[in-house]
Image 1 (tube, helix red, strand yellow):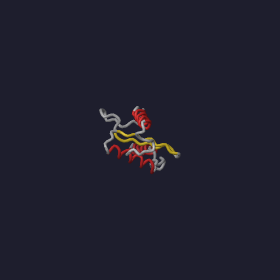
Image 2 (cartoon, one colour):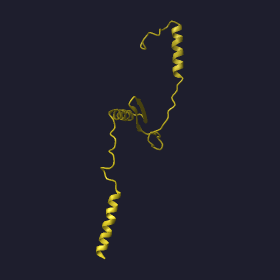
Image 3 (cartoon, helix red, strand yellow):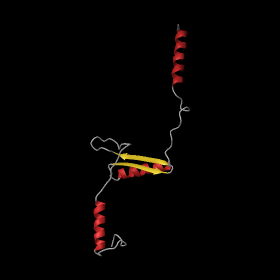
Image 4 (cartoon, one colour):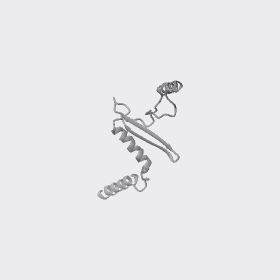
Length: 117
C-alpha cells in the first residue's frame, strides 16, 4: 500500500513538473532599443518637470517607438492610455499671421526681421 502511494505521488509530481514551462523554452524578453530607452527617459523627464501626462509616438524608418509617463486622468489616477488620441488645433496662429501681414503692409516690419526686432 505504501509503495503504491509513493509511486502515485511520484507520478503526480512528474506530471506537474512536466506541465510547467521551462525557462529555457520561453524566448527571452526583448530588450528595449537605445531609442526606446531615450524616448522613455525624455517622457519621464517631462513628467518629473511637472507635466501631468505624456504620450510620445516616434515614427522612424526602423519602426515606431512609443512611450508613456504620468497620469491621463487626475481624478482616478489612471495612467496615460496606450491608444490615446489628441486633437490639436489653434486659431492663434491665424491671428498672429494676420497681424504680422498687416504690420508688413503698414511698413512697420519686414518678413526678414528677427523676432527680437
